[in-house]
Amino acid sequence: MLISPVSVSGVTMHGLSHLQTGSTLEALTQATIILILAVAIVISNLIVVATYLNFKGPHEVINYYLLSLAVADLLCGLFIVSLSVYPAFSGEWIYGDVVCRFVGYLEVTLWSISVYTFMWISVDRYLAVRKPLRYETIQTKTRCQCWMAFTWISAAMLCCPPLLGYNEANYSKTTNICMLEWGNMAAYSATLAILVLGPSVISIVYNYGYIFTMMRKVRSGAPIHDKEYATALAENLANPSHCMSFALVFSFWISWAPYIGLRIYELVSGETIDNPLLHFGAVWIGILNSFWKIIIMTSMSQQFRLLVRLLFLTICCKTKGRLQAELIGLDPDD
Image 1 (cartoon, rainbow, N blue to C red):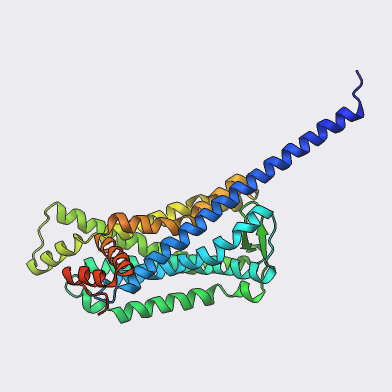
Image 2 (image 1 turned 135 degrees about the vertical axis):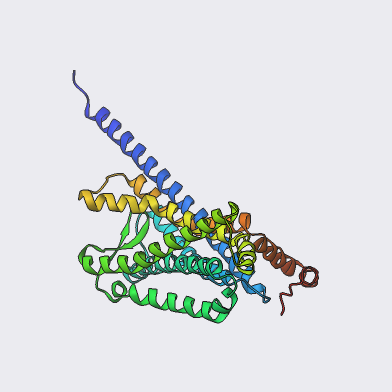
């Protein structure tokens, strides 16, 4: 049976048209997902930053760490997620190599800042439980701000070699994001991973292990001979910031677990998994963590809900916001 060239051409053109339509639909879907993430991350973290900056009264020390996390997530939404929307639809990076390299550098820097900040949060919660009578003298506002400044500066310096041109940044069409190439800097990459993950993971595991051990001890009614210490410890453990901070840390690592696991598997096996959807999902589930924080803070922290309420009352009616603050003994203009 003979098939005419016209029919073959017709089938071929129909197939190409179908593939192009499917490809366009996939690109449009991914661009829409990234756009929604960009809007959600920027708005949610703007609310967090504005909430803490609006209130000038007495803060818990942990709030300064949460503010640092929100600033890092806000920068991620503005300069990483937002710049990936159009390239996801067009399939190519249009902003130039310099911007691509900067985005790749910013990804690593902000991720390192988040990891270090979670380490400081765990240390802060540990000190609150370990030394409840001296906590306020140990963890002061000035000391916390110094640690945060040190964290941002050290993370920026540790991650700067790629920005200076020692390795390239390439736009990944599977994940729709610019990423640095770490293969030609194996020694530096391993050292950076050790410096960032080593102290952070060890501190987080040890500190929260101690906190939950003390929680079980207090709930079980185990005797504590120093009554003053026992009273201060019980009051401190009743603070929801312990569980909230652990939930923030847990959600961060759960969000990035698919990407970390995928990268470890490819590194160990020596082969790249040819599944664009898997790579896209792993990266953007990790980035989605920048939005989950406000959900956790709102659901687990009564203080944060109150401060958000004060923010919106102040925006809608400044006098009303001041009145509400005075009613609860907190003045946002102090």
